[in-house]
Length: 189
Image (cartoon, rainbow, N blue to C red):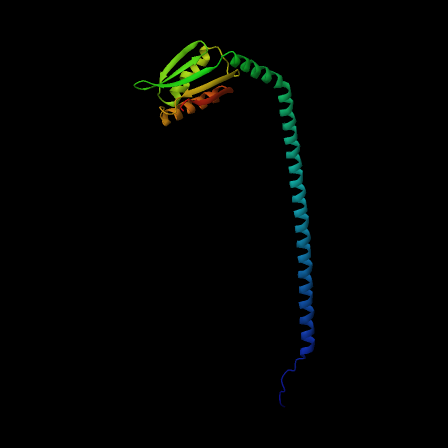
């Protein structure tokens, strides 16, 4: 007898393979939809959380602005009175004047309406600021008083570095005294 071999029916096997392939594809599609839905829910939750944080920060900012405006309203009269007092004193000649002159070396004279209060050689910015602060303290002015100051120099004779030192010293004093206002006057023609 001759062996004819095993005959395999391919159509049934192909049907099973195709059914399994469709099942895997449908299962993957379902998983993709689940992941997509979860991602959308996570994004929506994060957006809501971010919007809540933004609204909280906005509310806090509004509260700080309201407190600041209330503070300004309460203290506006005090500031206006201090400014008016300083302007009245300025009209009467009450002002600190920083006068830069040169003999053999540069000197800074600190004056008020009555005359010379102090003078100093042009050292470092901190030394000059210290001299100005000493004069202000000796005048009996507080850190919250309005202090008007004029720095007067002859631009045709003054050295740029000296002018720069004195303006930097005035800035240092302005950091210590809240209402220290200094103007710079060049008297050269």
